Image 1: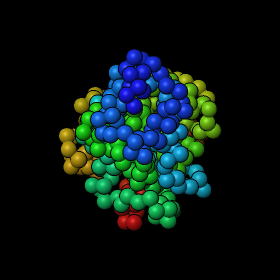
Image 2: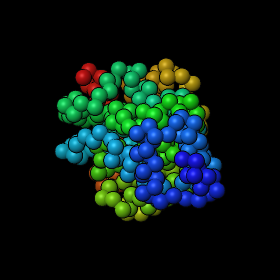
Image 3: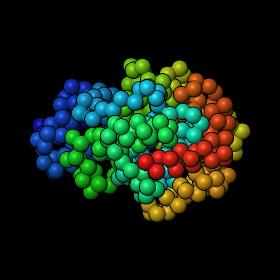
Length: 328
């Protein structure tokens, strides 16, 4: 590890195979906590290369507990996190709206590390039970049209890293990896990333797969459509600049999508919005994101997807998906 750290600190890059083997060695407990922390910190001081990202991704996918949900043809809505914006749980809410619109969702997520409340924090507070049992997950898909893939249950090899990430409390390359390592290997994906460089890396890697995808970076620095600014969207067909005007929406303020300072506050905001009591700005932002996911899965326009999303939220179908999921 010492020789490797010296190379990385000197701004040398490593190959995809080297990156893969390092993560496999970490999973085996070959390195101590100080070495792992140093390794994670290096990537806050230098950019990750496409080969390094590919190698880390390949290692986690090889080590994960895979679950086959292809019969449901699900989409995953997942952001990298790490944007420091402390919005409410937009992608998680959008997942239930997407499910309510008839598009199956395999939601991959975790507890918050660099934010006050990750998707798993709020879902756990709402009463969702986490499981890696295939029968449980299939019941969830068949009953609620959505299942939750809580990352630690599917990536047990990373147990050596979790406490270090929590102690560091800042985004690491594991934020970059999260959306790439859904253990159900969904064919459809909507991904939010925290900078334009990462959008480029993701797009390059996803172009080599058979995924149907939309990758989003909001130019205000968000890893989702915030409606506070324009956003760059890359798909397997094109790249475009999104504006709220495209959905006949007005720009909103950052304050209107603040997610609270605690899990309790985040959960209350979540329950309010999914129950149809959200503000105009809150409803607009979740439906804009869900609309893109629906459009990605159904191969329709974003505006058409947005209309499906609004109907799902305002009719109560999104809330029904949550109610059914928590009842399992």
